Length: 257
Ligand SMILES: [Zn+2]
Image 1 (cartoon, rainbow, N blue to C red):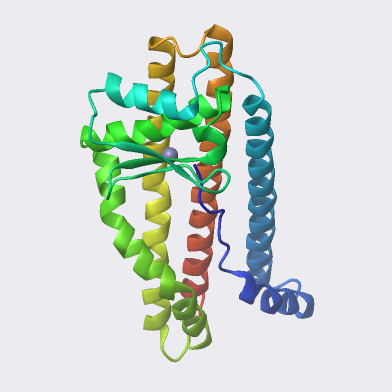
Image 2 (image 1 turned 60 degrees about the vertical axis):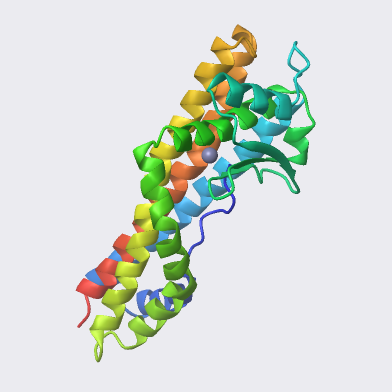
């Protein structure tokens, strides 16, 4: 499940763009920058809608019980067993939509609302997180790539905003700094794109198993699919938002005077 929303890192420059657009509205460069601004606002609006849609869907499917009475914890434990995985623990973690699989200590962490609840949403989330545990056990390549990128992305996220901000100030005297910032940002964009196959594959594994193991009936299966599809959209929008931001920084760099 998404642990954070898209972080837009371009707000400090918006005021500057707006002022230059007002003073020179017909300058092609200013029009291009305004187009980016419109694109970012559109992505922010879509992102907001996708998040709201996810919350709405999960709220709806949290109120539809499974006929077998299984909680998220029981669903997770059964999926792990059915996949021959015996060294992964299922634990409860505080918060809402905080569910995740931790490959470091091999735990499927389910939020309280999923762990103790018998619902279509709880089963879908529990099975999705176990999908990541199955990926880990089977050495699924995109997951391995994603895990390898985690320390790189943690490092670059901690400094990228400052490097880009300083890079923009010094763009004409020391353009290499902006280039370093762009490379750091590109790592986070790459990470958000590698996340896509990992998330979609985990949901695919979850849905196949839910149906095969008879956890869901035909009616619940459609609902579980709908819930996981809504979650996948958040990752797609995050990746596109990150790509648009990267292109924006590249265009600032290439258009420098
Ligand atoms: Zn996931």
